[in-house]
Length: 267
Image (cartoon, rainbow, N blue to C red; front, side, top):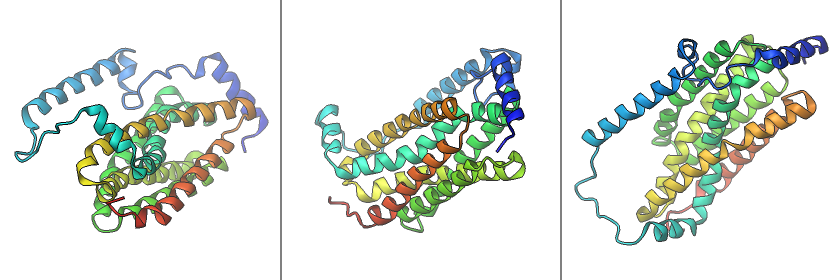
């Protein structure tokens, strides 16, 4: 636990502008030093390039049959499947956790560890990079082990690291290791859940279920920052927030292993 004097110093710095720069994207903390709008222009340019490449290089499979029913009907049919909401919940934990930390980690590092906005953004970018690297690892492992087992193991790792971080360790090295290991677990889980979609979802509905699951993952990322911020405002500590995260990840771990490992495609 940080001594009261340091807590007061930290709070004073935040109140007097030490937390400026929160709008800086975690992927472009250095770029923002050359202009507040520059990170957004970089992202916009990257999206335009991707759109052009997709238009030129991406095409449907030659044997693909175009659906004849409406989008609303297909989504409604996918929504009737129990596995759609089970997978959505698991993805909301895995990918939702990534989104949540992408949003809130710079604030957490600035507030609790007294980092400058640029340094906090850089370290948060490292967290995001680890999640990106381990997402395909989750898919690769799911080709060799049942994706429910991969998901369960990854969420267990994230839960254990959240418990470690709840004890508010020094950032170097324990906190850094815990946060990066948590990123690896969340990234792996987000990859393995999509592998699970293809295994337990009726083939004609895989696309619709994938869309719903992906949307729920994005929505799941909005809740944890609000909870973490509210708890910190009330208790001047992030420990409760990390323990809640560990509880949620453990629940996902148990459900993935106990339920999703035995689901059949025709449910």
